[in-house]
Each structure stands twice: as C-alpha cells, then as structure tokens.
Length: 259
Image (cartoon, rainbow, N blue to C red; front, side, top):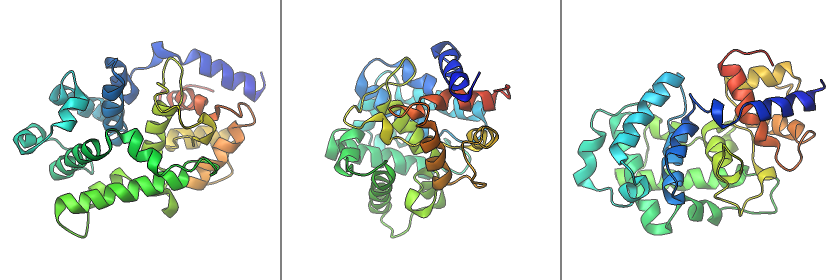
C-alpha cells in the first residue's frame, strides 16, 4: 500500500469503537451541543501527561459538573469553590483551576459560548487558525489577570493556553478545534463556520515520532512550524480534511503499534 492507502486504512480502522482511552470519550457522554463544547474545552485543557492521569482528572471534573456542564460553568460562583478543592493536574494548581472556571463563567456570561468568542478573532482570509488561536489565548490571559487582580498570571495558567505566535505547537487547542470543527463519528462539527482545511494537526511526541518516520516532516523540534508542515503534507492526501488522520496516528503512537 502507498502512504495514502495506509492513512485511509488507519482512519477507517480507528473509529468510535477505538475511542478509549482518549479525552474525546468524555464529549460523547453528552448530547446537547452546549454541554459538548463545555466539557470538550476542559477535556482539551487537561489533555497532557500520562493518559491514565488525564482520564482520572477528567472523571473527577465530569463528576463535579454533573449532567449539565454548561449550566454548571454559567452559574459557577464562590459557593462552588469547594468543588475544586484539592483538584490538581500536573502543572495546574488548585488555584489555577479555580481561575479557569471563573474565566469560563466570564466568557459564557459575556459571549454566550466559546464559539462566539473564538469567531470574533477569526479571519477567513488567513491560511490557518494561527492568528485566531493567538488572539483567543491572549484574550483569556487578560481575563485571568482581571480575575486574579494581578498583572501576571501563573506558569500553570500560561501553560493552559500557549501562543502559536511564540512558536508553540498548541497541541491541546488544536485538539479542541478538531473536535469542534471536524464532523464524523468521532468529532462533532459544531463550529461549522470554520472549514476543516483551516485546522492544524495537534502535535505531541507520538504524532511527531510517527510523522518523522513517514517523512511528513523534516523538522526536529515539536513546534508550530512542525505542526504546519505535517498538516500541509497531509493535504496531499486529503486537501479538504487533512486533520482527519490525527486520531489514528496518535493512537498508533500511544499504543506502540506498527503503522
């Protein structure tokens, strides 16, 4: 098989039946679009580190937020601070997570949805979402500062929303955008104002290793330029929806399978 045939084969093989373990599985617990967006954003924010640790943290978040995560976020206030007590995840402290929840409450109150906020920064004439992500992340940093009453934000909060303008591959944000913009049995296609060919593949160590071996990138370091190069090369095999291959590539890497 040539590379396109292999990519398409793995795309078909890694369907919804192979979803676990993956943070995406938590989005499939919900039917309502607002709830899917709300839990999806948090699932992406915590999608780093050991997969068992990610699943454990997200199970607790789902337990805290209950059957209506969107409603929980909209109504989050000081009376709910006790819910996040003791909740930590690698670089994120309990206070980082509290500020995140307060920031999301602010976004929903002022914009109605994360999509509405994101689209205020979107420019359809740009080749991909680099500048949109950059402006979106900068906006969240300003909200964090406002909530914290300080000019600086913690290293944990900075890590939540890295900036592609500074070179970051922005794996977690690109992952969230894949879930929201693409549409198949895995991804939800809720943000259909943005075409799928604007997406950039979420690059982590698994994706980087496989894509180097497949000669989809010549870059050595995981950064935004590597993510762009991989995406552009995948467009040779699907110019409309190049990031559809992400789930299969990632899980082949995670499970140490042979491509």
